[in-house]
Image 1 (cartoon, rainbow, N blue to C red):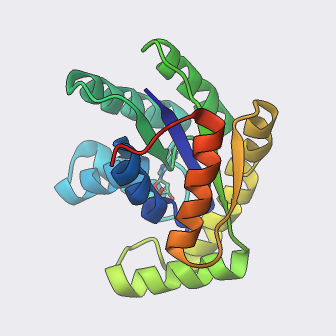
Image 2 (image 1 turned 30 degrees about the horizontal axis):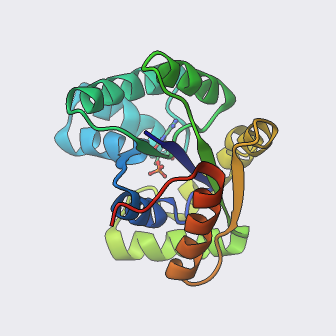
Length: 198
Ligand code: AMP
């Protein structure tokens, strides 16, 4: 059972590379952004709260986000799935600390953090194109600006946190999707011993 975080700024390619990781290694995908967007789409109480933060480009408060993740992990355990790609979580140091606890209480741990590193101008271009293509509401110029600010202030410090824990694997997130994925696979297999299930 292998647990991986895919880490990076908004627009760095986390969703795209997660899809390839779950396909190659038979892992379960948890995207906290997708979980929240699903709640918004279904008009739940949680969705209403989430929308008020997401539309401003702010983070959902840690305590709420951690309890949401805890219940997603509970459902996953009931379904008997092992090994997770965490996409979009953690985004703050308290979330990273909570993740350790959530995994520990399930008898497992975090094995590696894949960091997709992409320059800011490219992130902005990618999010603007995605907004046009998919209609994703928070991919608009004002919200993008806030999301990048929040990333720098609250999320980027995790790079150092996980480097100290010797879990961080820096990946150049610029270029062709398949080439980036090859770099991820090579690094991940060397670091963790994970093998393709294909
Ligand atoms: P994403 O799809 O990962 O880009 O997430 C979209 C938005 O959902 C973010 O801009 C946040 O408002 C919210 N969100 C997703 N994951 C988290 C998290 N771990 N902590 C707080 N807010 C989150």
